Image (cartoon, rainbow, N blue to C red; front, top):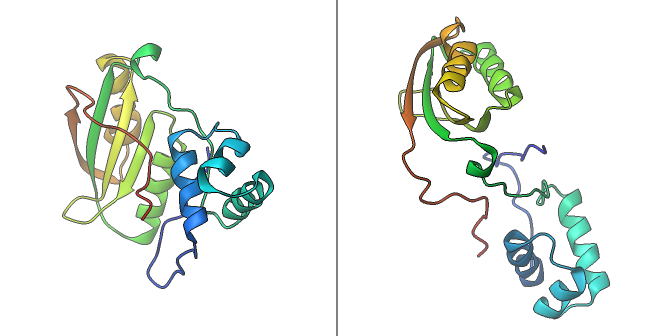
Length: 166
């Protein structure tokens, strides 16, 4: 899975024109839309659309082409939102935690945050037994983790990866 780069202060924002933005709106809805259909929708040639998509991929604006999978269909009944507080915020501690969480297949999303906690994670599990195994592996047996708190989702009200395109 591609890792999207974070915007950092001082980092240049991509220069996107109205055609690029229109293309992004289309492919965020369905990245399997044929380029000729995108071209018709945005009033460009298919070759121009292909060049623009390739340029946005090369620039790191488009970071991955993925499929959205129904978690329930795969038996992933538990969605947990987990707050993790590290024992300290030294760079080595934070970097090690980032690497651990990034590498774990059960961790679907991971955010390094402010506000008194260190990380917020979204974790998928088949059941509570599997979730407990994950918490032991990532948190309970991890000397860098001071505390963690789990919030179990009752219903997925909204979930998505689309970015608002102005």
